Image 1 (cartoon, rainbow, N blue to C red):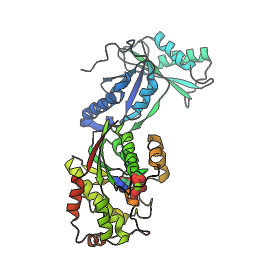
Image 2 (tube, helix red, strand yellow):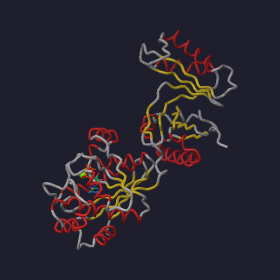
Image 3 (tube, rainbow, N blue to C red):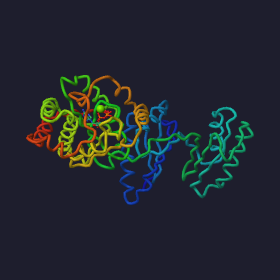
Length: 397
Ligand code: ATP
Ligand code: MG
């Protein structure tokens, strides 16, 4: 049976972060799997900080040592499945210790802030009821610090939790990244270009529990070493959510040239994309990926039409997930900035689809036109060759 850590107030730790999970609660029979993965991911993210995770039933506490609070909070922003968190101080389970700590924290609130005290008493043996605790502590803060009590919309809530062997006091709740723990949904292959969108799409897939591998189509020398370095840099950002990330670099130049020479110019981009999908399918099958992910969006550029999306999907046996399909560009940019990929994405190196691109790419292509354009090419063998020759690079977080 899980128990509380033997000495959570040990001198190694100066504070505790109370974690709250959201959707994990909805998981019924699968809950155990989710809790286990969530805990494993949390431990991995804080491993080098000296902090420790304690799990009691569905309560998660991270105890941190001196000077590590900000680092630990920052790491926990990569813990998918985390709804919110509160830096708290653990105190003995008596009203004096609780009130003293609540007063200390209330003193740190901005002058004149309104507040209310909220108490959650899980230990039903505790001599005071939760209302009594709130009134006692709230009364002292009000009298001694002169802060106004506001029950409906306080600036701050001073929260007290009375557990089985100890209590916590905290005033701050920070939003977590939400979603579901990485690795509860299976492995997917992210088509990662150097653009703004695909890293955000990868982040969104991880946020719903996927583990990423990346597939990048490189057209050396038309896209230079700088383009590849840029993609590997983006991969490093994404690896931070899952410790490591394998990037499959496909050397695309020769096949891209063949495709361009083979079909009508206005279909070139779609011919490249279908070949990318076929190749990605082969890599995915060989590496236990269950779906592909792209940064495609509806209408962001003229060629991103429903017709073209259908033409691209037609070349893939695997489902293609497009997490950003309905997002506005500005929202994607804001997310890229938030997760730290934006600055790298806007470096000015070309990606392979801006090469050999006609002035007026087809916007309403039909599958039959593409099938005709591919006649006489052994597309399957070409894709197999590209997949076989792909270079594998493992990026560590
Ligand atoms: P991004 O910002 O991700 O490059 P984009 O808005 O530039 O996307 P496109 O260039 O049309 O859109 O690409 C759509 C999607 O196709 C990309 O999000 C990515 O998933 C995939 N893709 C494009 N080029 C490459 C490439 N060289 N290697 C791997 N995937 C690619
Ligand atoms: Mg692009």
